[in-house]
Length: 497
Image (cartoon, rainbow, N blue to C red; front, side):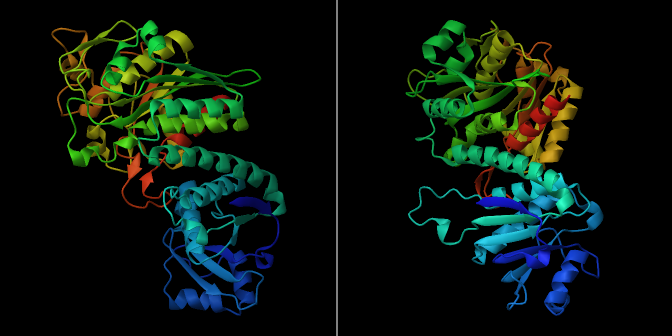
């Protein structure tokens, strides 16, 4: 879909569908919408009254203009209460409007920047994100695709004084949506297509496109580095592992060196602690953290933040076989710590342990953020619309949470209660890979904390939020791409510090 900015007045917009906003609890129309209504002879106001349009966020209604405007139809989208309008309100409204326009067969859409209380750059970014994320579909394996009804051209109408800010907002929003939709594509691909080697090829393509540095380590290289925890997960697989290291570096002065680490389990059977069939069905999504990292690294060169960013992924599947790691086996991580594996289905933290240790040894970052579909316990605690955050540095966590708020991705802090570390005590090794079921998300975070030393670190557990079984305001069924926009907002903010 092509998106452009125009200073053309609302009543002169030439499109199949013109989108205007309406706020809940307001009797009259907004000034711009009132001008449209006058051109329509009052039909718009009358339709809203007769339909008792309540203007909840994402509510829509439309009418034909019968030649009274250049636009063929006018669609009204609800924005909720004006005082409560935020960037995510605009994302939701833009997604709802563009989905309705698509379903009505509109090929071209014009929309005045929604959210009159917000700065123009924020409004343009949110409209672009809502439109591109809301119209996303994964249909590459279907004989009949959704191309019969597709919005091909979106025009954002902004006043002359708002043009510069709107163009920059559109640029950032388009790239943020591109990162998220790239992650969604990877997550939605079947596991027989997205293997560790496929993720490595994707990283190499990203590096070529963005002129990034990339290092891909095979099994032998990982063995030489002492990645026994990571390779222990791969032991039962026929697919060889790959450790991926992508590097973006600003051309000018670098404000910070960041390590972003994504869990890259391309399919999780549970290993010898095999999952039941219903729990295994969607385990192609267990590389959602890795997908988010790759999406971020794909667009960073075009955003040019003043930072150095290292994207790290330990990629493998987790399969049962005669050579698989067994409960009771002891693995040695890259930093020398030994781990008793008391549950082979707690494999993600083993791969992350070596990725964290690698970051400390090879990258020496100022800050680390890891993102992982790590524990069912987190999804039980926070449900399917919220991720958990754990940290050893509250100031860093506050910045990550602020970035999540800007991105419209819900993240809630969970405490790392030191007393719970007792549950990770092993009789034969430095620690076990799982503790008791109560507080399982926290004990997983405590396990990872053993591999970061004093480096400021935030762990994002996205197990509940990474995949959706129903359509969300701007996510289709399937992979959500959760975390990509949060990490982008975090990186961009770090570059401004």
